[in-house]
Image: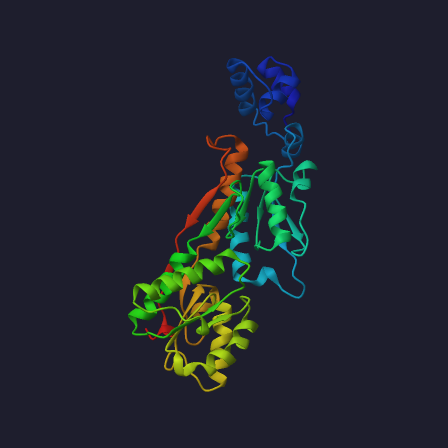
Length: 341
């Protein structure tokens, strides 16, 4: 196997010079740099990734920080599995490592220590909410100006990087579809209010109704927590209000499936009695009965884009690397049978 000494001999420089060129450390004459790179290529010399990371003061890892929720299998949920798949693909293609960490949502997580101890070079925060403890950890990251990105959750600090979907437009499209199907009394089963994307969906829901000349009715807006169990529990209130409903928008597929199952057990069929549009377009959306009309969210693409943006920034090839990442991807309505299609 070729070593650094052989590269130095062929290039006519010292081993230290070879190390500086290949690690990108310090100023270097262009002619010297060219000789070293040509020699390395000729000898098929590959720089040791771990040694390179230490020489540059980097870990070579992109960190992903997720909430630890007891008794919840996060990796089996469509949201997390798709985001992680996209992040993983970007990391793999760039030759970076991926470090997965868990935080307690009830306490402020010390993100900055991950950088200080060189465990990560950048990080992506998944599943963050607007509660004070989580906001405090993210705010500290932003104040330090470190390379990071929050997925699908907005924060007030202008230094917070974010990659999200346009949930306001997604909610609008869902309700617009129900209106086009003849629905006029449209309820809404939303997710947990501490997530900004829950608010975004509701804004889209209300905008579509108002454009149709319908004033939103808060008494037919229900709250779940994005789990199938919460959808089943919400069925009691939805069933009670059936005489005031002809359609319902549900903020994710899991709640929609739970709601449909429990309504069916009570003798209410979807879409014959109640037309329904869900959200996410998870794997289960086309397999459940009836198949769900749902808003497709590009979670995989969001995760991939967030990781790519951070890795480009770390490479120094991004001209505006001092600015926080700010990307919003579009959703897409997928029409199936649950809305009476």
